[in-house]
Image (cartoon, rainbow, N blue to C red; front, side, top):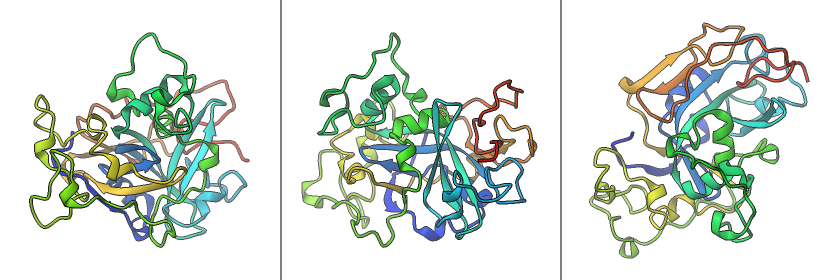
Length: 305
């Protein structure tokens, strides 16, 4: 779990204008916000460009399906797999390079209630016109066993569901640089809710006071999902928009790498990156031949579109 204070500054487009295997480890600990839900990334996989990485969607070139991967860096590439799941990626390198990072797992740090409602069958929406999730209407299916916090976004399909990402979000820009909408207004320090203050020179809204941590969880940063009123500054985005925030950048000595999950080609390429000992990281699984001729669970090995 992170032990620092999250930063709400958005990542600039130049952050993504690099090879995917360089961007991927730097994404660990960053926070992706889509509408009211925010996820701290704990596991990602890098995929190269045409003719470079046989496990990538773009290996054989541009198609209608993978066109977003050839677009500007920092955009979301969302694709459908196995006829039932969506997976989300962030595009890297300049236009026409066709590279991306798959978002494999993370910790929901804001609006865990809404993420849990979605994961329980409530759909990818906000649960009603007011976006209130479970209390805002909707008819999500109930589950016999509640979903543990660690499992809300533990796996690429789960992460996409928790964030409410689906086909219509393919191509969505996750960089606020030059956005006509602009970032949400951060509250005045004098109106900061209890537990949040400005202990130093960093403006309120750019960091959370460690004193706000739950008493029984002293060794990690405050869970925004447990403090919804404190998380308003982080998730006050207009509906249908997304942004990548600096969040809690992972320490270099906490980052591990290894082969990508479920890949049969380039299976030894160590482009899977994760935060060591984080409970939200998904279990590694080697490739298992399937009889179905559908897309794989990663960005790789899909039939030509």
